[in-house]
Image (tube, rainbow, N blue to C red; front, top):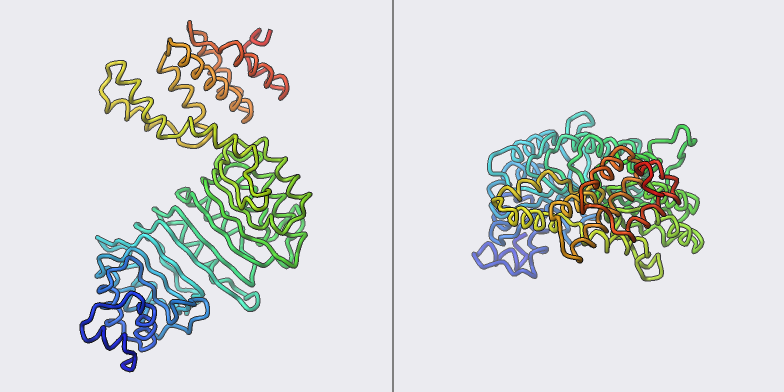
Length: 441
């Protein structure tokens, strides 16, 4: 270590050269000098602590020396600037997990992100970190030369179910299929998770029959999404096998079926569509017409370098019904009524922020306005018409009729063009029973 000029300069008290950070990190880690390593991280003032024998190539880095992770896990809270811990090729001993757990539960812990790359557990029965009150982002990935008898990731997913602040999860499994049963159970157990990124280049060896799919079959994930059992708003699904076109086509079919009924996803990345035929892409794009929540779909290279028209329409519609719009609009309307501003803000807290609820809440806001000028009346009518059609689309007859009957007050009906549009939609979709008696005549 002392033959490295950059390290010697640091030990002599010189400010670390930013271009030499990976080099110094590598030397201190390989020399198993945890105290010097932590002093170096403190001197750089960086927010991310990268614990790797090769920061430039973490997947192929040599294993971390024994005891290094234990020491860092125990003292990481002493680094006031660090909010993210990255560890690669580490052996997670029971002691290391216990010390990390203690640090995460300590008052003043600032860690918000944890990343583990090609790490493994030393004890097959010892628990992973069971609670991480401050962590919002978590990433775990393994790169296998051959499918292992036991995936390291599966033990981690069970623990994540109890992380109360977790919002974003990234999972990678190269050389082995993902376990979609465990992933789905995590999403169902922890509704705080709103963003999921999945990476795998391996199809399941045996997906199982439709009536009894194997745990590695992605149908488990997409059925839960299709039935709106999760709270995901963002999904990056980079799961595809270049040598198995049947599996890639099956994944696209699952996604298409999911989007027909899902009302939570707002952003979807599906690079695997690039491995499918042009006919499959065209068919998939044609299936997007029933979706009302998705506003971003990528990569656009899979759709002729442009966003599919149904997604553009969703995005345009949601611009008018964003949570920010509702907060500002309701507060202003309440102010115009002479109500204190704070009460207006308090009212908006009861308005849900999902695309579906935003649409309905826009109609509520429009009714609060009770506009009398032509432009306001047109906006209110358009919002109400859209809310009515959303209730029809989601098969919610009770809510649709309740909204329709609430419009009986003078001046709150739909404009003729909007009424005709609602009747036309109800007729085409077989939803005339969602309208009050005589409304369509």
